[in-house]
Length: 248
Ligand code: NDP
Image (cartoon, rainbow, N blue to C red; front, top):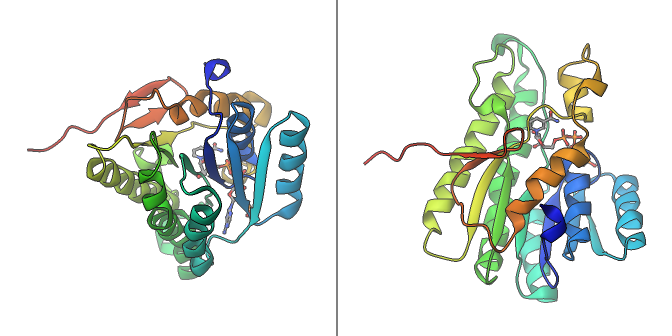
């Protein structure tokens, strides 16, 4: 599906682009013709991405930024506006697991960090780029969630709460913008062979899991100007859009 995707002349911001799913989403977006703004803390990972994108004839701008630097996140929108005057695609992918532990054993600073990166920084980023996505003729937002937002899984409390929060936020944002050409969806990538998954499940054989490039290829069509769906949860594993029923 991604072969047919044409994002020529479009600008895409991807957080968590230094490794894992975000790295390959950034590569896919660049391969489809988008100028990718790649955000993460690890400069080495961003530079590797930049090399790969440029070798394939694509374009990228690297933004080494810790998303807990909220003033930095606020400045991002202005900087993008100055250079491109719009944003076409937001991929809010950066996230952390925190710790797998009974809720009563979670340290306050760990819980707060999970909420700060997964929820507060995502909201701050949305606030920073919302006006720019509205300036696009087909703004697309992809908000990375997790099956943990829905499953009742012991010991995943902080992470599950953070993902339920971003999903709810994405749905509200989608409803606010439903009469605009904006399309906003959450994504459940499913278990994927990354550093985060290895931290969560250290006993698991990673070769039994799909590679992040495979998952990214399934998610990237959500950036398409042709996408109709908004306010849904895209399940990469099944390719289905799930919806919450709308209470009257
Ligand atoms: P990784 O741990 O491989 O990558 C996480 C990315 O987030 C890295 O690029 C990291 O960059 C970035 N990041 C983390 N903290 C910060 C920060 N403070 N500031 C800026 N960037 C930050 O994770 P995955 O690729 O596995 O996960 C990507 C998304 O998919 C996450 O939102 C995750 O919750 C979700 N997900 C993953 C699943 C899986 O099985 N892998 C399953 C379900 C959901 P750096 O460290 O360089 O800053």
